[in-house]
Image (tube, rainbow, N blue to C red; front, side):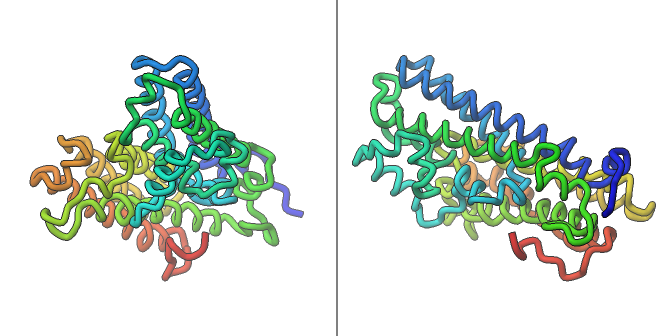
Length: 341
């Protein structure tokens, strides 16, 4: 048996990530998702403009907390399709919109019960579906009557809160996953060594950069301005597209910071983390300078230039992680962020 003292365990990148990033980020998501569920339920009970505004504000907070936590696309969040059930995206064929509109038209009452909803299509269960309920065509009726649309929205919000709670529980100290992530050992699954944990962290970073670029930025940008379509961005109806991207990038930056590589790499490797941070700060600065709403920004010449810059900065950051950081950590060359789960 391999015994690891608490002090030694705290020195692993996995221990730092669990304690300094994963648990706080997931606790924030669980808390805001619970508040969102309460806000939508309150809207159904007492419809009105103030209640609708409260629900929409709670939705925005949950989206931001989701962006931060979503970089943990492994372990508890990857199990049982939880990532897709919270955030069904990309959706190039508009499956979610069609399914949600069909459900609203048919008023399938089974979808107003969170336990039943959890067994339905992932496209009906998560934040994009709730975004349409709260901001899509017909959403203004929520301020007048707490009918089927509101009850379905409440079930979606409660379902998201339930899933967020499950993910947080899976990361708690002493749980099987967290125990191995913090202190991997030969013969243990899914991590047999600290190098394998580092590989998971590197994969999470590169996957986040690829996801933001390939699923959220490039489709609405199109190859040229006349092919741009802001309605291909996630959550464009609520104008939360860029806030989501911002928190995803901040989540990746915070994950990298929590891993502590700037202090554990050899002296000549410190520049790698600094370079990644530089690219991410540039991406965040440009996102902050986007002036238009998602629906129009991708066509606007100035905003389009800023968004293209964000794309390039994330591409550079991804290469730095997958090539330079992985090599400095002694990970196998040819490492691919999209291999496996």
